Length: 303
Image (cartoon, rainbow, N blue to C red; front, side):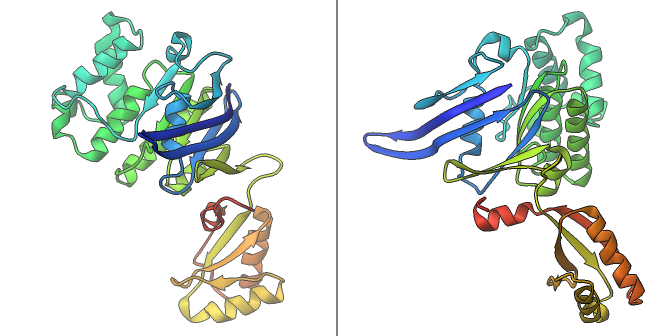
């Protein structure tokens, strides 16, 4: 669906330029949800802007469905939520969504119903739609930004930090809307620093560092990213738990909060570790696993 080939982009003038992208190449399959992760200044937002046709690269190519990213046919099937919410703050929530519904080609006769439905999907109360965006909190702006991006169920979604600044309920709402779009087959590119949410919704992550793709890792499928388990036991039993796991061949270490952490290759490894602790009569208060995305940040995305 998306093909990026040897993309370069720099900023500046009068001989002083900063290189934002340095030979980025990647592909996104139709219906795939890909997370762009990496440190601040890695080039993620610049890459998104090139994918959207907002920026022209210095060198290299971007195609979306075989077309240029700013082709009107591509624009017609694209939803976008920017990181910097530069919305017209003098508009009410209802006027803002109405405007974008019509821009997206929606039937003007159906505007009121669709605006109410879009607000309900992100749990914005009807009262909020009557207020100007200038009176919205950061979390409310994030919600209405997600609502406008998903008007008319676009086939392509580009989301730049969609849950930034939201409370836990807002994070869950954004996640549900992404999973909803994913379920209907949308192709999604997501830029986010919220690694647990990236893991929950994405099929694959692409790590950028210094304007380059340093790693692409599947989160699902036959060759998923390395995983790490964490097990919480009573604080006074941590040493005994580490010893019990060591006897079972598991090299665990204690985190500052007393949780035990260790690498696993499959969920069955976590189940075996919990069983080993139970047989040693050590209570397990919590057990979970996740892709070890933090390790990508520690290594700069290099394995």
